[in-house]
Length: 199
Image (cartoon, rainbow, N blue to C red; front, side, top):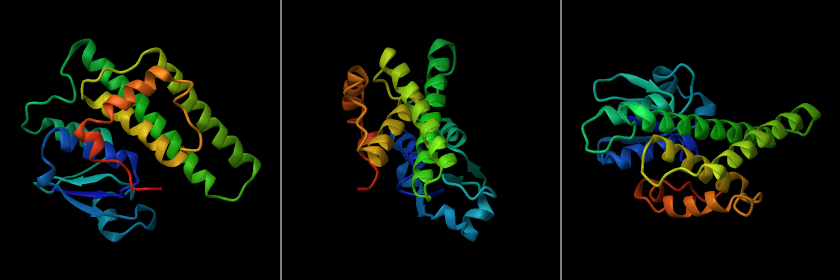
């Protein structure tokens, strides 16, 4: 398998964390990709020119981290990252959606911060920050479990991206229960081995 990736992408981190949890990293070739430059190899696999994009062993191109993570979970292994049914499944999927939404907002905010200042850009950045702040409050009120599943991985990647790109805006003091959860959860190999590069 081949994974088009950027080391700084929280969505790529999510996919890599799932691969580590499933113990299949040795079967995945990492292809460092500057998606913003729309390289031909990536576009041939993913017309959206976005990472992550996984080429499976039988040559199928999969894109978007939820799809790739579910594919990884479908492979043989003892760990189920996507609970099959019941309340555990819906909680994991809900947390994945919340984590993905936080990552979307943070990535958009990061992109806006690199452009020249203007009122519309500032308003959009503030809107994305408010979305993240509300998500943090929800997580503080209902902290995820320590079990490794798609929901806890997505939240871990979202919090890690906040530290990576917005470390100057500490979130822990206002969210002590969530901070304690993250301090423990980030010790899992799937998190520890996928820390983003130094900013």
